[in-house]
Amino acid sequence: MNKLDEIMKESIKEFNYKVGDRVKLHLKVSEGDTERIQIFDGIIMAIRGSGVSRSFTVRKISYGVGVERTFPVNSPKIEKIELVKSNKVRRAKLNYLRKLSGKAARLSEIEMVEDAEEANEEIKQQETQVKEANNA
Image (cartoon, rainbow, N blue to C red):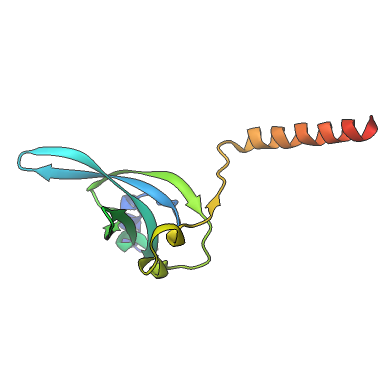
């Protein structure tokens, strides 16, 4: 690894999202002398690039009009990114969503597990209940 890669590695932000995720982007918006946070809520339609030049496209419907914005992952304008929900998709780019509207544009949701240990405990409890019901 050369020195340029090492320097860039330090400045790369963590991006653990995938295409189809509904996210809330907290963006810094400067108006005159003041700066405020504005939320852009939408679905990640595409992720392109790698390293420092990685970017992603988010689409939302605002007052019946589709709005798409492309953000660099390492942009200083992004305060934080919140994952609202994950959707099951089988494409790398969701360009087909541009043609769809209303219920047709919905994506099937993947249930997110908050804590894997709690989920494992629930599964074990259900298994013991089934065994007890079979024995009785």
